[in-house]
Image 1 (cartoon, rainbow, N blue to C red):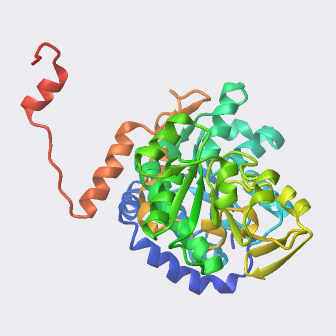
Image 2: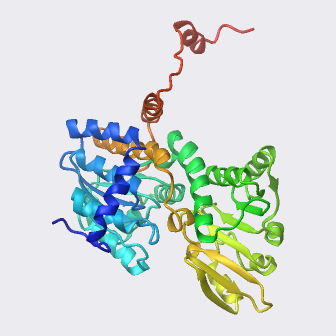
Image 3: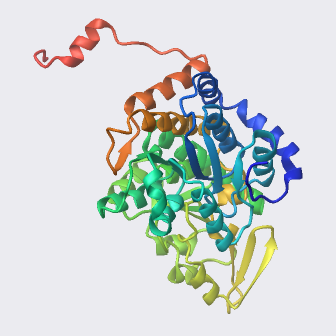
Length: 419
């Protein structure tokens, strides 16, 4: 039996059914897996992955293994692991998994180290915890690494900082920045799954509420779109004037965070930054305000300040902590301030993760093919990979598009012809 640390191997039967359910909604990745199974482009390669352990991730791990890789997986968030999926990956697919839902910080990092002890040649990260731990604590294993991929905005920001400071030891492809990732996964995936997490946690009525979205990046756009679609009055807070202007042009109200704090009923932070909602906001919030985070790390809501401001707290529903202030006002925090869409729900739908994880698989293959040409820096997803994923998705959806004619191609290459 392969090495692992999971909650309960007996959960595997349920997990396998759910993995198969997701597989039917991931035709692009399934097609890539069929090709990988025949060609074995990853034969003998050790891959260490730090990702959300979900049904969609399970199908990516299967693809990598069928491509010939040795795969080792740990969680990229302590609350996002689906224990039945972890069990099935171990029992049914022979993949080493180190992840338990609800694990504490010490166990979380011990699981990351367990993966790194396998001396991966390719790293696959969601938030850059695997990469940063490797660089900070286990530098002796860096010599084995060919390259890596990064799935999320927060991780890409961290990795670009490492590259800028000259401490990144190997090339990493920013899968997050692929158009077939952020235009769909970040917008439609985060939008739907965030609302799903809030509803599962609270069962509140969103219609008619003042719904505050902190941050109008691609994830924030998705959340705002879905909240408006459910009848909420959506307010946007921003620090970037261009994004704020875009939100206005998209028909949303843009206000300062302190103004939003006074009138908001539901708050979602999705900025990738620290202390977006903090003491001065908590103090003016209405009784019954609900706080949720869909940014990668649990730093966007200042939980320490929330605890210090409150006179007492208690769990009133699963994953819902009620903070009572000295004046009797109550504020509710969802999922400990962690990713609400994965902690309280199941994360992004398989249909959008299909494209994200297709990019992951093809980028791993690209890293192996181009390893001699790549330097220790953060690279974009090659345009041909992005385009091929989009084309394959359309084909599998039975959708046809046009091609440029010879005349049109010539026109686009020319400069002489004007009005």
